[in-house]
Length: 472
Image (cartoon, rainbow, N blue to C red):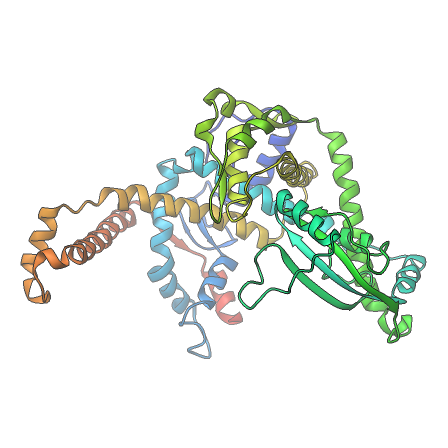
């Protein structure tokens, strides 16, 4: 969705000159490809083919998912290499060839990589996980709020039309039934809590804050958070007869208070970032998207064919020098709303989604600009996602799309293997065609892999393999 950013030292691109992109380059270069110029292997990888490396923990997680893991009491580097050569090395040969064919520059691939990178880095912003000091006064205040428990119903919806209808229904005295088995994820969704106390981490802080102001029998206005609306119906509020002394639950209180503080600090940070970066939303396109919305039984979408090409190319969101086109925004909105049942969309749906979109990007920018280090798990996710996207694209364009089975091919294969079929060709045509196609797909892949093995040397990190073998 955002303009593509450089992600390896191998790539020769003309980089944008603004500070954000430069910072992103510095961050992404060591992450995405782990390139080496002297032919040596990057120490983060257990195996490397030219510039593409199999990262340590990516391999370990993959290995532990297979039947090979757990069959023996000890492992050797040769055991691990045998698995990599058989199961993982073929994929990485194709991935490296994908880079050499510059498939990573395909606009759709670039967009998917950038979207994943933005969301992953934003979701791992330090503010979401940092341990914060807790003042004794704040701890005491939270403890006092534990003096009451509530029975509460939370009604969750995922579109503004549904939210308005359900809210009015509840205000008029309507009652929703708990979901039946197998319907727990449908909307509107009723969730009931008994003896709930303020601060419990299962409830979003914004909902907790509003809940604390309600009286028994009151119904809140809809509260929005990340694609979800919540309506609170406070059933009963009473004294907490089972409240333990503060000293007995201090650890739990500290954990809950840190969660509440992190939420408040994230809200404050986002407000600061919105002031720091110049943000513009072209809201004049809201009516255009609303009129182009097509609802169907279980899904709906904004039909881009109903919008002028010139408008689709126009900027919809601008954050400093970054531009998100109307076309890209619609594509992501459609993806998010693909399972939402609503007869129409509203400006509220679009504006809330745009705000969520901007918030994610601001958190991402903050990590990049401050050059916050990313942990190994996040780096593994970024690298592995890019590799998986490229592999899928390679398999489709270089193998699947190039294998064709004609009627004559299928007839010939049937005749050559006549003893295997118990019916005339007309009765088993689809089965024959499918079997022949799968056979040719496998043969094509083996042919490509064989050629790539001659082109690319495969290097193994013997020291790292030994460490992994000792730890398994």
